[in-house]
Length: 362
Ligand SMILES: NC(=O)c1ccc[n+]([C@@H]2O[C@H](COP(=O)([O-])OP(=O)(O)OC[C@H]3O[C@@H](n4cnc5c(N)ncnc54)[C@H](O)[C@@H]3O)[C@@H](O)[C@H]2O)c1
Image (cartoon, rainbow, N blue to C red; front, side, top):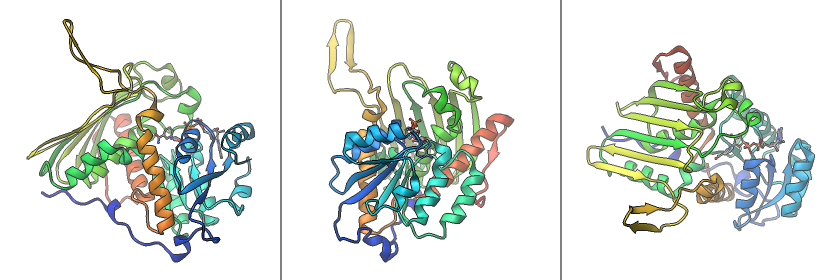
């Protein structure tokens, strides 16, 4: 069976109002950043080389954190979202605040008519997502979700090759998703669990690569090493098997700790062969000697570096989509579908059972 083109490839025009978000005609978008933490800092840094956007505001409930980041980039700081959204210096927003604040901030930004780039996942609670989704449907506002791995050159090339039929019918997709070290206990406590916080990237990649939805979800996992994960009722290690609409199987293995760096590999296997998007080492040198063959440099262990190109490409896509008045290539609906898989994985783990995903659950 041929692999379907993902719905996310469709790029339709948005309303004229959004085609020219700056009334003064200048093409450089003035961007307000919500959240001055780990991810906010990454976005601020990655925005600098992009000619299409400039950081004008940093908004954080922690005013000192907002002020420190704003000072670094020579822009304004606030702890009041409404002040920022009402400002003439805000054409678009990036939401990089904790996951459980995303829906509220998205609705506020949409009400103010501001295009949104929002970090993954949508929320930790899909009931809140369903309510927010209804509210957001009333606004013709561009929403791009922060699934940066879609913009990683290797992963993207693999997805495009699968969709171009290079492996013929996709039969197996194997995703290894291991981070160097777990985030803090405070972060874990409000992140929504491993499936929603971390494996959500892999659920999204499965959809992006295959153009298909998951039909069944079977999860196993546990807290094997992280006291922080255990303390907040989370797990640190998991494996999830998904059956796709065509019958293809996707197996994802995930760990919060890989002592050798970012281990992020994807294999797509089918009737005509295999495609592999492999790991990134800090440089390309290989060493050969009496006691080693092809010894390579260590894997990149800093996540802002492993996905630097992906984050930059993601931001560039957002700025282009806003300027061109078109829908982004990774949408709210994509994030909603990935969240449904994460919810199903959690249920599967809790109940020790295979969970069937009803495509009409909306
Ligand atoms: N795409 C990725 O690779 C990636 C990586 C890490 C984190 N994330 C996502 O980014 C988001 C933030 O994660 P982080 O690691 O930066 O967290 P963090 O805890 O380092 O930073 C969050 C910041 O948001 C601020 N904040 C809290 N409530 C706020 C509100 N209502 N409005 C504005 N600011 C608020 C906090 O004071 C803090 O400074 C999460 O949703 C996470 O899932 C994505």
